[in-house]
Amino acid sequence: MPSEKSGLGVCLVGCGGMGDLHARSILKCATVKSLTLCDADEPRARKLAEDLGAEFMSVDDALSKSKFDAYFIVSPPFAHLEQIKRAAETGAYVFCEKPLGENLASIDAAMPALQPHQDHIQLGFNRRFDPHMAELKRRIETGAIGPVEQLRIVSRDHLAPPADDLQNSAGLLVETAIHDFDLSRWLLDDELTEVMCMGSVLINSDYKAVGHTATATALLRGSRGQQVVIQNSWRTSYGYDQRVEAFGAGGKLTVENPAGPLVLQEDNGGLHRELIATDWLVRYREAYFIQAAAFLDAVASGATVSPGLSDGYRASYLAQKATESHISGQPVMCDAT
Image 1 (cartoon, rainbow, N blue to C red):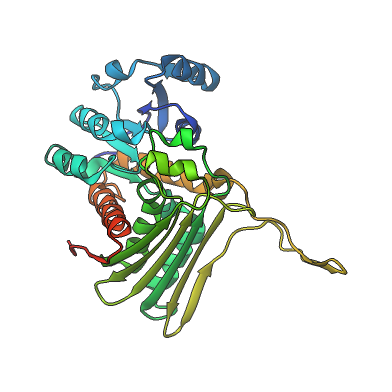
Image 2: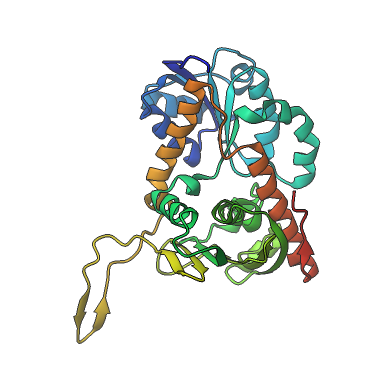
């Protein structure tokens, strides 16, 4: 077993909102000695580096060096594959935010170059690291409800993004529902073999102009006949809605929305309770830190990372099949491997 490294040198590519979050999580990890930031928008990267006491480097220089132990790729999806390839070829570990790429065709073309590095490439499916989801997974694995027969996932964002912000987005199914496709595979420990997806534009008609759906429901089938229902929306009036229910012959397990202290008040105005979180960051901040720490621990020890390249590929594959079903209005079969 390789000896454990100490004092890791980390480079983060992409200093937007997600990059800021990842940078702050990285700096909390005891294994990290130095952090270098870069972005195509160099003034933005310089500003964040100054704010956090990190170093700055241009994207091209950073991806040409072999001085880093690990890279975090947090750039827009269209840049992911080339940046992963360049970073992995330096011999470093690579963490990349989901999705693996903009579309399945580009991912398929890149896979031969990425597969030799697959043990050291991790995808950013942060919900696997959320303590609530991890406990749900643990109870399923211990047989608390028997084999899962039905799985239901609700994933609704609080505020719909302006249509102009979606020009560089891969869309609801590829960038949002992809979390739920991965979560389904992980919780069931199985592949999904069929998908039927319906999508609508019910929030902002301008979304049609940029080719996006904003509300979607997907019905999927596992290889053992399990049924999965995933509901996605880019808007709620009541907060960031993230719930999971697993049902089996022995009962059901539910992850509800955390809502602060559960003190209920009832009066002549009805029953009152605290609102759920209105921001994905509030809901999953801890998961992002746990995820970063687990990845960097693997880097330090030379271990294989998870969720890995194949998980990223499979989630993008399911997003593509869901998109095909949405467009055709018909169920689509999925390869089980």
